[in-house]
Image (cartoon, helix red, strand yellow):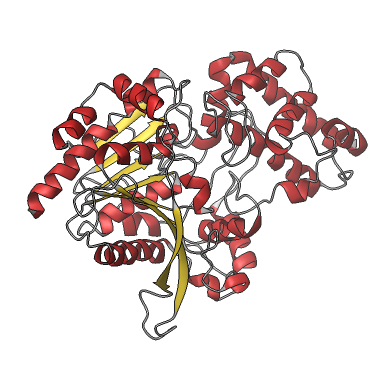
Length: 477
């Protein structure tokens, strides 16, 4: 059996892909709750207080007691959303005989430490990267005991912010975690490193790649919208953009600009080669779909097309309520809606730095600044906190990763977050995999007949992970 598994792992990437197309694996996750410590770092604040942390688990592929544990470090949302859109992990588990666990991040989904009061001040103060990592470390340790899996090596996986957490788990808890696959993890840009103009410049580049004229068309459309706003032709703006209410102030126009910019951002991030229902519903190649409409119109009206794709995929809305569909927050790329948006907004006000701006020069979007001073003013008013620029870099090394090991950084060239992460291999065990045709953590998604060759090749990640597992098992035997 071991020889058979080992041979499958070493198949060519294309052969490995075809193997899973035939298997059509469907993991049978069980939803459970783990009694988790509220405050890992202060014994006095809440004593031995606990909360129920949700996790999903399947052992249907596991070689009990011997196979590895694949642990997804949940990020800013409901854990089911990530489990249903990270099929590569369960495909790999079937090959390597792994136990699979998807853990929900505290303050997201149903893992609310104080229920509906979780976002009250000061209770929200227990929402930190450090607390989340400690949650995962404690959960892994206790579940390994419970399942008699103490000798089973743990590989952590994550996409986007979850990918950042996977990197941090390997750095902070190398005694617990053998290796990490961090897909689309912007560990540099969110630590305040790099150019604040880079993100929206890269969103622009995604559209420009498909049609160079696209950049100029959108750039010009925003300029025409600005002209209408300066003329206070608000009724025309309402009619053009199907708004439920007539804008009447510069604040409303600012909200409209953010609403529109967010639509382009979502389409660039989720530019997958097939339709998806992840973070909303998207057609296949949404950037190309939009590009067809841009070729037909040359006015501010071209900005309407992305709003329909992103905010009204069902076609049920008859108008757009700017303030309910898009909420401005401490993350210029968007926080989403509901409780999850509160949690991410708080994190963007504390440890996660995202002072990104657009300027209509290096990008195609309207000038919208978000400086450290603006961030501080907003966060002080909203959450009563003062951000600490540089703290994430201090805590988790920033770009000084030379002494780390066993981490894969995968990024897609179509992903505007990619250049905020690690694009070059730093050592034999700090490996960068770049996917020319990949959008936001495409490689974590399940195999699909429409996958580009570059993502199929990128899934050689499986071979590296198999080597880590073998080495760890050899050391423990």
